[in-house]
Length: 317
Image (cartoon, rainbow, N blue to C red; front, side, top):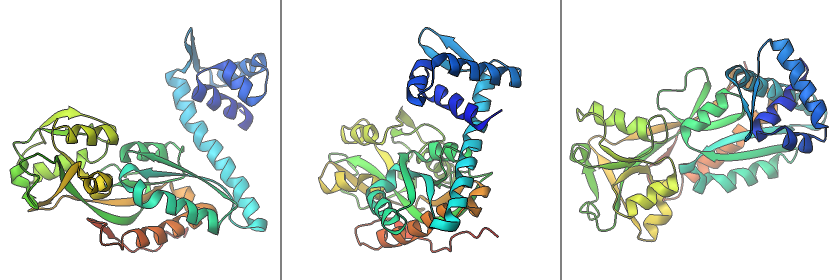
């Protein structure tokens, strides 16, 4: 099994097509098919299922795909580590940023890394916390910020900031004139929330159960932050989000954010990575810039509900 074959295989799965992968990789389609056949013979398993609509990985192929992602990332990291000895921190770092933190961190963080470490190729992806964790675990992301929703096992984590959650309602809601609302008063509301394991859903359900209310009453499940806010503004139902997720809409008068109390609903964001990442210089440099950017982003008065948790970058030991 060669690195080249794994790279070909991953690209076929990503694109769902032999012909598209062959064109992108500048290799004949017949040669690409031979590489896959060689892999299947070595693995003693069918890796790809060919249909009229394209190509899909079989269960065995999906397993190989996940391992191949890690192998390819480790190979790229090894190359970057060798280059770093002579040219300084370099290489590709894929970073996952939760949707709620994009407005205050996205561009400042990207620009800071580019200015300080021009040889580092930083790729920033914005996604829901649950998806970021999945991508860190399967090697698609080098680093990511994710929240403590009970699924950080198997990863090395560094606490970064605490984020307070707010009741988000339409401007004509009975709650719109309230400054605070106790958790107990949320029991009878019908919420629009992300699906289980995504976004704030796990933390909200846990907070409701700890208050003796049972799981939140969800009338609509939406895994798009944009549509979630639109649904709340249209009166489909209130939602629960961090301040940074709705700051622009609140300032425009489209939504109202009401502080939840007794108790407050909070969650902690962590920098997450696989343990081998600790030994790589480029991710270490990216983390250092991230800590500086987060500290600056949480200073403004308007950053409601954000508290920086000062912590030193992890040591490779």
